[in-house]
Amino acid sequence: MLENQGPSAVAFFEATAFLILLVLFVLLRKDHPTRFLAIWVTGWTLLTLKAAFELTQVAMSIPQLRLARVILLVIVNFIFLRAVICYAGKARTAYSFLWSGSFVLVVLVYFVESRFVVGAAHIHWVTSTILACTSLSAGWFLWNSTGGTRGHGARLLAGLFLLLGLHGIDRPLWSESPLFLLRLAFDHLLAVSLGIAMVVLVLERARARTDELNDKLRRLSLLTASSTQTLSVREVLDLVLVNVVGSLGVSHGIVRLLEGEGSSAKLVVRAAVGFDEAYLAKEKEIPVSESWAQRVLKEEFCFPGSARERCTTGNFRRRIRTRFETSGRRSRLPKEYRQLAGPHRAERTAL
Image (cartoon, rainbow, N blue to C red):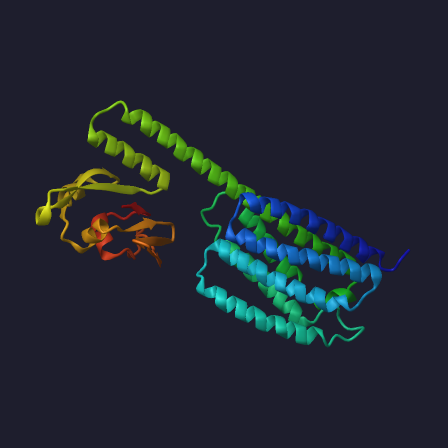
């Protein structure tokens, strides 16, 4: 029996599984062109190349491939961290710091691992710490971003990242352990499980998107059928607003129509959802001379989102972070929109 038959079998299993998952990721990428998936596929490609290097090193006893394999593993961990940050929707300003810091750390790993001494640990403590920290950071970012999301793919992926980070903290001591082969096999199993969890995550997002589109089509069908049964403009507006509010998943909505001409023109409430009668009576008519009304008439409008707004003025687009007013918190909405929303405290308001 060959001495390296166990590590060879583990490496062969890892390379085969990585290759199969890589083909699956490429096929999923065509139907789900998301940025985080594109970054993940890039990292998984390098991870598959690293597995091929490892299989070659173990099977053919080529120690020169060790440095390339370790460097690739560190780079892959940073790429996965960026994919997680992209999925979590963190600020883009963190990307530049991430790449610059990653480059410095990769150079440090090259400097440390290139001075490898035969008989020492198969990986340096510095490299092991970097790998563990990146995995733990990815798991932490992903776990914090799963609040309120449906499905189990993101939580499964976050848990695997955390487990991988904890398992790899003492990586330099593996070669001295009698359970070295078991620890190595478990590490490769966790890596394969990361790919499976990402497949689950992508499929869950696709299913959620399909359900959302089906719900919107159903509402559109109901809206079209109902609009043909009445000639009342108010009833049609009420029906449209109810369906729009339901489709956006918000709690409040209001429709104002421009009435009058010149300086006497006003924005008058013609349909509302979620607002009480006292507020509607008080804010029924708003002069167009007010600043926020002028912005609306000039098509300076905003699309509310869960954590930010995308504002458009002609061809100019900018994003601002918004924390919608909730019970017990101070509103971060602009003053003109707080005036429109009135004293109500709602999770989201559709304007």
